[in-house]
Amino acid sequence: MARSLQDRPVAPELHWVGGHRGLEAQVVPASGIPLRRLALRSLRTVDLNVHAILDPIRLVLSVPQAGAMLLWRRPAAIFTTGGFVAIPVLLAAAVLRVPVVMWDGNVVPGRSVRWTARLAHALAVSFVATCQMLGSRRPCYVTGTPIRDPRAVDRSAARAALGVGPDERLLLIFGGSQAVRRFNEAVTEALPELVRRVRVLHVTGDDGYDSAVAARDALPDELRDRYRPARFLRDEMALALAAADLVVGRAGSSTLAEVAAFGLPMVVVPYPHAAGHQRRNAEAMVRAGAARLVDDDAFDALALLASAAILDNPAEHAAMAAAARSLARPGAADAVAELVMAAAERRPNPDPLRLDAISRGVAS
Image (cartoon, rainbow, N blue to C red; front, side, top):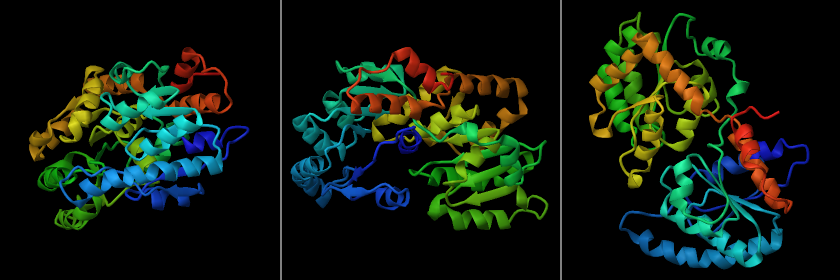
């Protein structure tokens, strides 16, 4: 979203308000955007510990803090994803009459989003059903999930950069930031058979990396280079997606959006917690024919090998890839940016059909 706003002919000045938990402190300043942090933590505690008591106190303290920030900066508009840290900012924005555009990427929005949606002037979502779930009288637009632009990455160049031959098939496996251990165990057990069939690029996280390297080193010499473990893929993730033939991963909104934008079939293993949000996201992709769903507790080495078998069925693979492309909204960030700028300039909201065309990357 920030990149889309900054790429406009007259780019707005951006400021970021965050909390004290999460990646914001590392990622935001590195992008050149000033960061101000509230007393509140970015993610609410769900466990029974001292933070379950401190978080409500931090929330109360953050409301006047957010108000002071808005009075000082006098923003023309606020863009938010409506999480826990947004509550004090949006309360202050309501008092100061600052227009708010909120985006949410889950079929079933979380509690914070459902509560704060009433404070937004316009809503942008990834799924039609989300507008109904939010039940807000505010205008609600299906824009898709803002992602990196897949059109900027060449598949042939990406495959060459990752050492994938023109006739080889690449399986990309990543579990996101949550519960990657099940993925790592399945890969380790299936690896000797798996690499005989496909090349594997496996995002392990920090905890699983050393054991993945050991599993690679245990492979026969002629198969060792067919398995590449990586702790994380940040800037390289676009290359990995462009080069891949099949993805096995979780059902976070950004993951599903990027997989669809690259036209990739997917085997999706929803994260079983977080109120089941990921399962509902995954089911939407399965209904479209773009993915297979495997329950978390059923995902093991055999399930992984069965997933890789999609690559042995060209007709099924092609049909899933076509279904994925039909869901793609590569211009989602630009569509949401249109809403944000309309709010900032006090213009009427853009025409829904134009926003839909922008999000699908077909607007002139």
